[in-house]
Image (cartoon, rainbow, N blue to C red; front, side):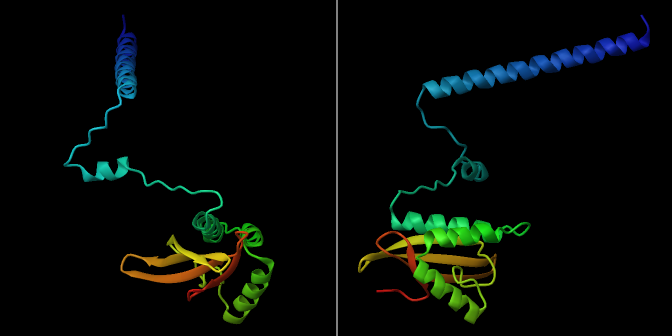
Length: 182
């Protein structure tokens, strides 16, 4: 037997051993996961590893059809995504979202306001926020008011803008302003 045959056998054995370890670990994990799925016990998380705790608890996002807060959150989330894709902003999508969510009357008034002020009227700024928050502010006449808080910048240099979004009774945005409609 020459040296190249021995080398070939050793590398073949190493591969077989490595495959066996991978298989054993994989079977052990799948068995453990099956056992955990069958027994409804809370997962144990080590107290001394806060980074793991944060990674294990994703932040949920939910909504309800016909709810004013959900409707405004859907609009702002999609609009900011369309405008904020710096590599390829989608102006066509932003325009379609405006057409879908805004009343025709408000869309005209907003376009005039934007021309006069030189900024995006939905965001009340030239750039796109890093974060946004949507909060219910209750019924106003025949409509509903929702507060949208936009956060621009990051770290120590953030600026917040609070917008009051008025939905008509048919769930279309009828006004966006910096003061309440109450």
